[in-house]
Length: 122
Image 1 (cartoon, rainbow, N blue to C red):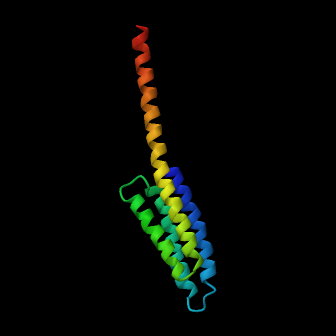
Image 2 (tube, helix red, strand yellow):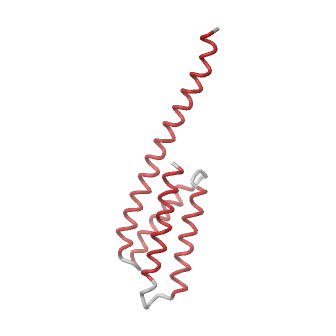
Image 3 (cartoon, rainbow, N blue to C red):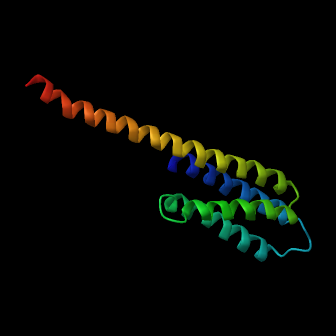
């Protein structure tokens, strides 16, 4: 799960940076405000990559997805991009868990097979 979710978060990192460049063209927004908010969101993306296996990591990822969709208030294209990344986040969590379960099952089967082979030979 960690690999899929981290890939989604790194993709979001770049999308947030590009959205900040678009938001800078809005005369009602200061460059400092745009880059402060975007920088915090980009930093959160990177930090979440390391927090995915800890309690609350996935929930923080969902909070980031909601914030990304809400950023459509400033850059309307982000409604669409936020929805796309929310769908990618869901898929990363859902299928990542399935992959982790399958890996655990195969590891248990391999351990069971290697543990029973010497007993059969004796």
